[in-house]
Image 1 (cartoon, rainbow, N blue to C red):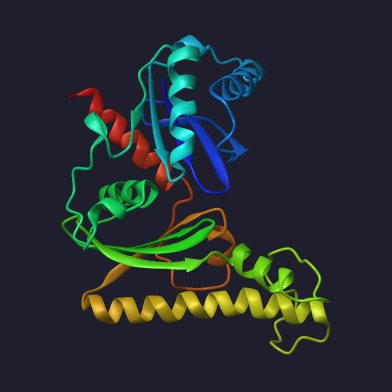
Image 2: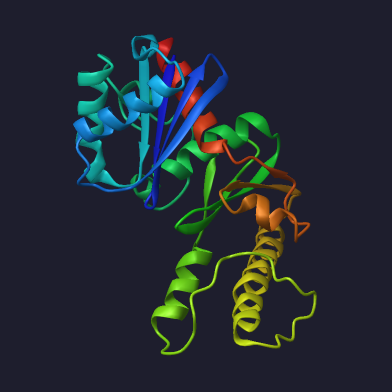
Length: 259
């Protein structure tokens, strides 16, 4: 079995793959100070609850945008699963597609993994939107080359900035506004309308401009935790694949096995 680990700025997601099938998934808050032993105790307990034999794990791959976590995850792999971990973008897990930007080394591992997974699953030119701590828009051409993209503040970051920099505005949860009207009748509704529909308008506007610049039909693939919520309120997504990054890690690991 493969243990795939996706380290984001907010959460770390662990997923088990039996072949191409994802069998289990767990999430924990990202903390660069968390040791390999802490990861091990937490993960082994979860595996025990689900009746999973840790010795069945014979491969582990990590995609990380938080460099300080790499050593501790290396310890986890070697000490608790007796495997040498793969790190996406390095060694046998090196990128096998063209990164056509000014500074290829600056491309985040998660965005590179999404590029691989999206191109494998969806033909043609693509725009991949990933809803994380930041919201990224990545342009992938029909040959699978990464052409660049956009980085925007995530919707939760936008809301945090609004609340933390005002004296009287309350903290609210991200959800679709309850009423169809854009004229809010109380403070909470006005905030939710501004944050939610403002974000939808931003996405729709950027997608329209990106498609015009690409000059060819481009499918829009959405991933990340909020993709499903936004999909209910906009027509811009051609597909929603919340497990895109994990699937990409599984593809890279499978390729590495053959090397």
